[in-house]
Length: 267
Image (cartoon, rainbow, N blue to C red; front, side):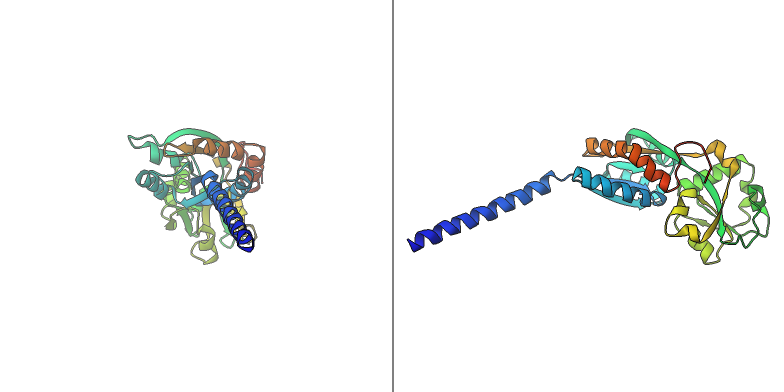
């Protein structure tokens, strides 16, 4: 009798372990994962959105951030990923310039305004007029137009105002993208930078810099689109995320980080 009880207990414990193991394996199988490529300035808002979306949809979202040039190259090389989230629609052009179409669907997200930033106190005495950036007293850093959406949009604006060729003479360095521009002000590497307004709302930057709107930019604000990649293995989940990001909750989070749904430079 004693031996029979031991055998029954052994079978029962073994069955429990097997059920637990099967449940764990099923959970792993059922949890879908999507990969989002995004430019660096998009990271804070997407981190907040993905955290909420993961909890509600029991999935996993990975963010891979870099400048638009590197992201486009990585997408083309790896043939992996589900969503592309550049900082302006210029990021799509780096993918569309190839024979293969990588974007199967896209949604409008909002506008990404450009601003001029200086250290608190405006030590170089910037007047707020973008035309004064060409004055020799200003040491300026802008983003590289060949590597980032920020650089492309900056060059487009300055070229439209016939300032680019003169301003470039005052540029002490080209930044790969928005990352590091505020740091260059803090390190006295520049007195002024042209940056995304949204960068003001990350890493405590609002406490470190003065911000000057660019009224001329209002007529040609950078449009943000997000696209589903042809390489996606979970297109339905990717579509659900973009619907969430452009829904009521998503819009409120984007607004929190300085992005606009309408053409306005009101702070």
